[in-house]
Length: 210
Image 1 (tube, rainbow, N blue to C red):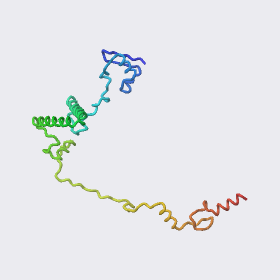
Image 2: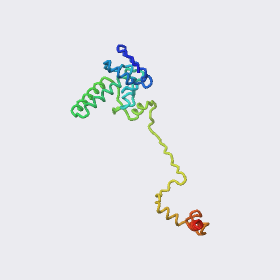
Image 3: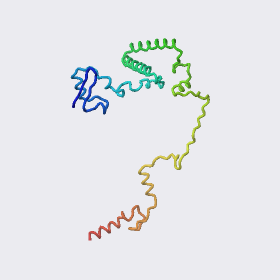
Image 4: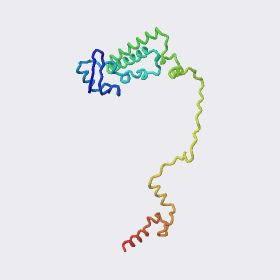
């Protein structure tokens, strides 16, 4: 394989073209990168689909999304959620640090609330209906009375009979009480037919032996 690297331009090309087909640098390119002492993978070779922030992290916390038209604002929101998760992972097992972390959040929250008129969805000043409308993006007011019409269940023929499933012994016993058909071999009403009739089988066997 032929690998060409330009350190100053941060460009690397391999004849196997693994990056073009899979979106990931090949092992040949990584070998040359390490030999040349490159400390970081060039930004152009880390596609967006491999990044940890490819999906907005605030999907885990809320259905409310920032204005998608402002990419910088969306990035700041995602970074905020990531920093919050990172801090929480660090102080999760330390009660003292966790208490301090919560106290600082409350102080910051009160400061922002005093400077802004924005009402959070979790505050009591909003009703549950308003919160649901905002989460679902519905602007129509919810009616005071909601009539729910319960469909009448239509049972099919044979349904609704609550009987337990009979056991094999019970099935065999009930079958044994039924009147059997007449066997054309022995001319008796028995639970076998001409093919399995013992009289016919015995006659056929004796004829074969003789």
